[in-house]
Length: 215
Length: 215
Image 1 (cartoon, rainbow over the protein chains, first blue to last red):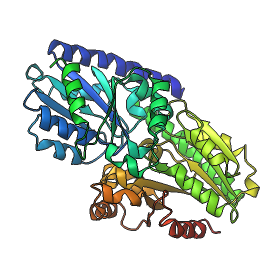
Image 2 (image 1 turned 30 degrees about the vertical axis):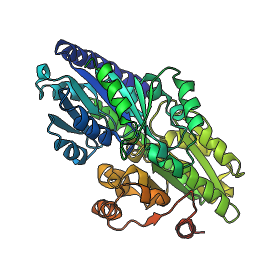
Image 3 (image 1 turned 90 degrees about the vertical axis):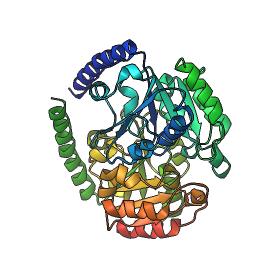
Image 4 (image 1 turned 135 degrees about the vertical axis):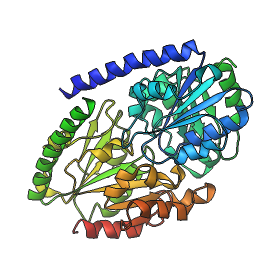
């Protein structure tokens, strides 16, 4: 019974995701669904993106959080349109919330909408938001085994960011184990190694992002 | 509708958790439900616990993982009874799986059963497994804002472990922000600061664990 219900929820979510996708397409907006563990660096990535690309492309942000507006406050200073969705205990965003959220933006004056999903490697991977693509963010301090332990995200992501490369020397993170784990799940996904703290590697990622979003 | 279903699932889970709790009580077994983000250090904690306390108390482990037996393989070498539950995409363990799992152990010859939940700060907090208490594990590299951003776990945990203290000097982690965030959510929970990598701080935690489990 529980599985049947889950299927119904996922079916409804997929239908609404289709509607979101159409709205975005008709306004020529690319939507990127950012997924990671808590504290892997999604908000820091967004801060760099807003700072470096804010004068090149028209950016908006939807912040998903279980509680608090802390991430939204961090983004607010970059002067981009931003909407916060507090899930109040919910473990992921869904397409219905995104559909409602889109009504708060002037879509025809946007190029890229970033959605920062709830910090969670599991549930957000199951719920299509109507995004153009998913971006997986993982950090060296989480260990090198994440791709095989949470395969769905790494299978579906358009790109993988490996953050906190500045800390790798102080950890047991084994780069070749990580790479073979990732390639076992997805042998073609682009991988960007970078440090949001030092800024190392961000340039390559920004170039890719501009190209991938057609800007 | 979705909320009603969720309530029914949670009600069923709570009923079965009661059954688990009775079985544990009748065999005098303490069950600890370990919850953290992916890569915060649950398995490393368990390795230290098995190594340091394996000859003082009779330990068993239930490993919950979305996929793979990697964590179970790491624990296997400590020669404790271990059972792996692969949730196959599921984002948390539930009391029904635990009830079935208990049948695989000789409960009367155990003191403490550790359950390593799926790496996720959100969903595992909502599902009572019938555990004696929850142990929250968080690491410095995840940032200092986790308690307020994921309040449910920190509200319910019997103790909080702050792992990876050896890395704090290389991060932006602000200890006083973390502490005030934690105290805002739970002003009395014991906090153990430690590093599974260097071993620093583990002694205090082990003493507390022995005392708290009545050993």
